Amino acid sequence: MMKTIPYSRIVETVRDLCLQAAFELPADVGNALKKAQRAEKSATGKALIGRCITNFSVAKETKIPICQDTGIAVFFVELGDAVKIKGGTLPRAINEGVGRGYTEGYLRPSMVSDPLYDRKNTFTNTPAIIHMEIVEGDSLSITLAPKGGGSENMTTLCMLKPAEGEAGVISAVVNTILKAGGNPCPPVIVGIGIGGTAEHAVKMSKKALVRHVGTANKNKKFSVLEKKLLTKVNESGVGPGGLGGSVTALAVHIETCACHIATMPVAISLSCHVARHATVIL
Amino acid sequence: MNMKATMIQLTTPLSKATIRSLQAGDQVLITGTIYTARDAAHKRLAELIDKGKRLPVDLENQIVYYTGPTPKNPANGSFSAGPTTSSRMDPYTPLLLEKTGLGGIIGKGNRTPPVVASLKKETAVYFAADGGCGALLGACIKQSTLVCWDDLGPEAIYRFTVENFPVVVAIDCKGNNLYENGPVRFKKPS
Image (cartoon, rainbow over all chains, first blue to last red; front, top):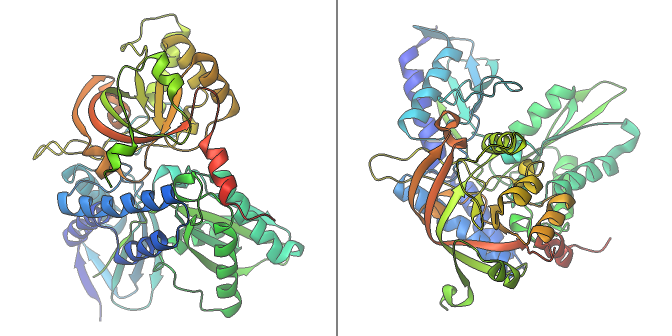
């Protein structure tokens, strides 16, 4: 039995997701920040986290975007194989919804059409980046994770040798954090993709950022590594705003995939403390 | 405790004497006029300087804020305007400091050694604002007027009138750098 979802409903839904993500921080991120504020040893760092928390409530109450960088609109979509979209294609509906959300909500248009030469603002914040997966069933799940440019620029991909093992992964992550310093607006969430291919590792690392903050990898070995990495990252001293402190990351999330006998891709994506994401299931 | 009592109050434009008195780590509240400029505006400013042309704004002793604000909400004039990563402006900063007499910069994140050297040479100061706090910082901006380059959208140059805009001195004109000194204090020895 096929389920039909009208094109216009997807447009409306995506529009609302854009607004929700820009003004309201998910509760899990808010709670992680409160915990970080208690844990932070630097007085200035503690005060900075306090202002971040105030900023979130101001944004929610006054409908002023949490951060002026309302991000590149990144979508993770799971389309059930028993779902039919009536009236247009799904990517077009998503892009139309983004254009409407960003324009009607006075969110910042941050996309330039030609990345190298003209760099002309499209003024609609489109095109969106859409990662689509076909799944079994009759539902359509749309997750929007607007990604700020400052943290996006700190993304790294390391094609490690299998012999480098766990130590290689730890050093890749810690080096990324040290090099990033204050740029990605710490405290950050660290998303790590291990395995697959180069492009798949990066995609996993980004998807890891939308996991409920602090939920552990289901595999014990990787959940232990997540904890170890969180300790190492926080021992870097980078701290809130990169100005020094004991809380550099709120969480480390690892996603994994099988890989080629010759490879061990490790991708690291960072999310600022404004870890916006919003999901809707139709 | 009154936070403002522990903070230095500054009014723009900045005199060299004021700039010299600031030390890395000082908490500062800025009141007055500041100008926005980020990637695309810096590119255009540098092109004008290279061609020996007049700039659309006089930056002598002024402060440039690296930000790309959200559009104003016409309902109440509100907008979000936190700092963007400063290092992207590093290729242009020494030129701008030398040729315009710019007194201060607000952004986020560390700068490269040529920028630190230029801040020392030209007696200028680099302030850090709270990254990701655009709603709070936007509330300290009482007025925003377009100066030029509307086609750049959020990357245009705007004149902001700010009141008690909170920043910390990240790199002072002697080259002391909070982005270097701060983390060292909390780094676990390996």
